[in-house]
Each structure stands twice: as structure tokens, then as C-alpha cells.
Length: 181
Image (cartoon, rainbow, N blue to C red; front, side, top):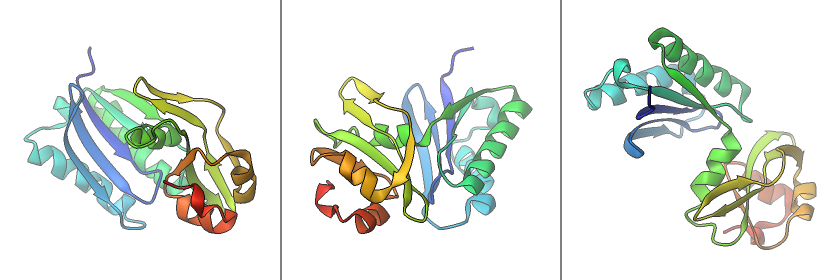
């Protein structure tokens, strides 16, 4: 079975997002940037999106879902819904690392800079990854890590693009706001 149609679910961050793609083109997407609505809105968002496209779960070849790092509760919700769909419909499940997807999105504006996606972990700590991004794609250069903001800031030079929902807190904790953008 070829994977032509993908339902994508992202719940590892504060934003709850769903999208539907067919043959590499996104046909619909919905994002809710409202804290703690994942459990109430995820299934409704999926059902509404598919209904608006006049599609059902039978039209989905695979479900892609973020698998972390990220919010433990958000990950549990997204993975539970995704597993319910794929097991109930005998579809493929595609696990997508959260930091990889953030780096992939940054490819449009990264230029020649190294990309470091950040997600707030706890206190002054952040999950992060190091990526090379160019026209040929996204390449992770090291294992994912978790460190305090000042340790991360000391590790990377001015040619680094920090991205992700952890950037604001990272900027405040590390004092390196000039390194963004």
C-alpha cells in the first residue's frame, strides 16, 4: 500500500495542529494556539477537517504524529488518538520527532545557519537538537539534548538560528536575544 494521503497530528507543543496531505500537497490544516485544549479539540478538529474535505478515515493511508520531546500530556493525547485511528482502520503510523519537524519548518528562512529548535522542558532547561538545513533537506547533526539556557547559548555561535516555542524563555534565561532571526 502506497502512502498517498497522510493525516498529521501535532500535540507535543502548546499548539494543537492537524493537517491532511495528499501526494505531498497540504489540502487542509488547523492550528489552535490555545493552552490546554488538546484533549477537548483534537478529535473534533480532525473530524471537522475531514468532513470539510468530504473525506473519511477510509481515505487516510497513514497517520503521522509527533512523538516528542514535548509536553507529556500533549504527547499522550496525540499518540492515543493516532493509535486509535491506525489500529481501528488498519493504517500506517508514522512517528515524527518534534524537534525534527520544527527544524524542517525553519528550512524556509534558515539560510546557511545552523538551526537549533528549542522546547521548554522544565525550570531553566530546554530540549534541543542541532540541525543543518539546506535545499536538499534537514540533517540532524547530534543526538537530542536537554540543558540549561546558558549552557546552550555558550555552545553555539552567532550564526545559529534558534527556533521553536522555547525561544522566548530561552532568550530571557540566556541573555542572547541578539542571536535570533
